[in-house]
Amino acid sequence: MSNLARRIITGLLFLPVILPLLYVTPLWTFTLFGALIVGLGAWEFFTLSHGDDRVGRAAGTVLSLLFYFVVWYTRFGQVHGGLFAAAMMAVVPVALLFSLTRPSRIPNALVETGALALGPFYVGGLMGCIGAMHDLGTHAQGAGLVVMTLMIAWFGDTGAMAFGKNLGGPKLYPAVSPNKTWSGSLGGLLGSVLGVVFAHFVYLPAVSLERGIPLAIVAGSVGQLGDLCESVLKRSAGVKDSGGLLPGHGGILDRIDALTFTAGVVYLALRTGWITLS
Amino acid sequence: MTLIEARNLPRHVAIVMDGNGRWAELRGRPRTAGHRAGSHAVRRIVRTARRLGIEQLTLYAFSEQNWGRPDDEVDALMNLLQEFLVSERDEILQNGIQLRAVGNTQKLPPHVREVLDELSVRSSANRRMVLSLALSYGGREEIACAARTLAQQVRDGTLDPAEVTEEALARHIPSVSFGDPDLLIRTGGEVRISNFLLWGAAYAELFFSRTLWPDYTAEDLYEAIAAYQGRQRRFGLVPFVRPSARPSELVGHTEPAPT
Image (cartoon, rainbow over all chains, first blue to last red; front, side, top):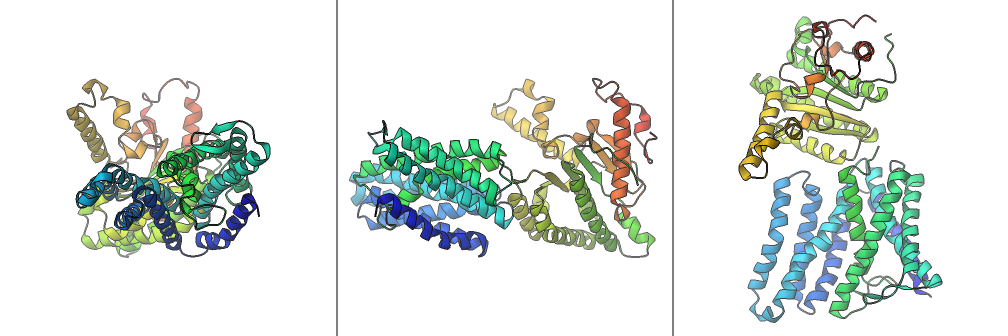
């Protein structure tokens, strides 16, 4: 089975899990599911930075989870602004203090502390955007926003793969990701736009096309950059896939690398009023 | 039936909901019964405003000075407010209404703040109508608070005293962050502003109705809007003149302007 087909099948299997969590069960169930993704993603992220140092990986994962919950609970500071500010300021000192307690890791302290300070924002904070947008508007609207974000990211990814494989052409950025092409990137944007068009006509009419399509282009492009950013991290750590949990998809982190960036853009569009729910 | 123009609607209507207490006294019932009847009027008017397509409705629900009322009455008002937020939650979200509070909401009891915060955040991406509840609100307090913020910035050196302009101050006045009120209504027969939206009311058309708030209906709101539109028509002849120098007859209207 081709990688593309395997990827699409795994994606489809994912739907029966995520759609009920979004649309049917109480809101907090999706928040917990998000925490699971953050936990697994953070674990993979800290595997890149900390290798077999399980204590360091666990600490980073816990820190990311805590940050995710604070971001979600305070809706990026919309309520309980003090708690949000405290969490923002705590991440860096906590990461440094943790390294202070581990003299045996001093040779790697700079990289490991850097990763400890980055991971909570990269995995926890950006995933927190998804949790926060799920709690906007009515239950169906919030769920629709999340599905739209997933579609911008994953239709984009699939579109890029389909176009890139079949059209080929000049490479996008071979130093980071040898297989990505400009045609794939364009196909990715088409996929992202298709995701928003689908959202508008099927499940989220509140998002207009004249606002939604520019959003899809920006969020899709930024998502593609997120994909490249993760590739840089993996290259630096010398691995190809961040983990092997999902067939055809690489690890969790490979799945959410574009999604986290896309989610950040969509959430900002909501907070700034570019996208409204009415 | 009052006829109003579908165009030329006031974009922002603000209401001093006065007369609950007198309404109850007239019926020999406790003041809290008046407030309860008043909360039904709030539902009616929110619905009417939304159907008309008014972009913003600001309701003077509880003034900073109202904390001085007897504890029982304050508690009853807070419970009514919480009940209102819980019962209107779905209607607010389904109709794309953004709910927000202006005023010193830190003073509200936790059980009210909890539902208020939740609904404010959840409805923050809605724009069909902005429903602002003035809670623990005072117009002077709001201006003083904005002045304090600017003074702090001046002291920190991030703002030059010459930059303390009208616009700079207005940016820190939450009640006008979506625009000044065009029409300010007071029910219950009194002819006072009572510390409501002092900044924003600078150019607002004022309309005073004798109807006590619990009796206030859609028809009363139409009447106020018709009066507003009548005045708009008259002054539309000189559209470039800011409505600062207006005949005093505009203040103190208790009946709609003859058209």
